Image (cartoon, rainbow, N blue to C red; front, side):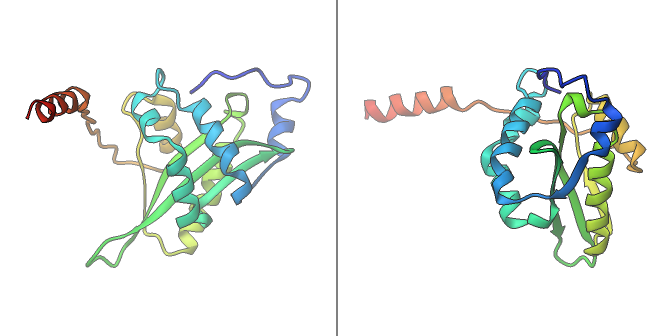
Length: 180
């Protein structure tokens, strides 16, 4: 997770947790959620996650699945979020839920806020008829894996991300086009 400025230590973590409100995200929250994600999903700490986090991802999820976009708010500050969607597969009676993003400010981590966000998210999924809930994270993200296991997830499967930088090929194509 990203490093951010320390919180006001005059308010104990337990008091902060109790005064955090979990609610559905609104359009006014889009910018705050996006910027919080930018702070949390840094390239040097989570290169695959960083590449996937952008303003379009947040906006698309919000506009297509508002009910699955939640925020944790302390006072007037967004201190966490959970963003997800559902997937309906052809020729399947099952509806799948997919929790794509969970982010909590470091100074609010380990205070139960992520659990509260997840519980609310799971409740919405249950109410909407979801039968299987899916999450994914990087294989070396022990904190996230531990969190999801504590929430009841199992059957972890490793997968590999491969990338291909097309800049050099694009430059060669331009040179060939200019030469013809």
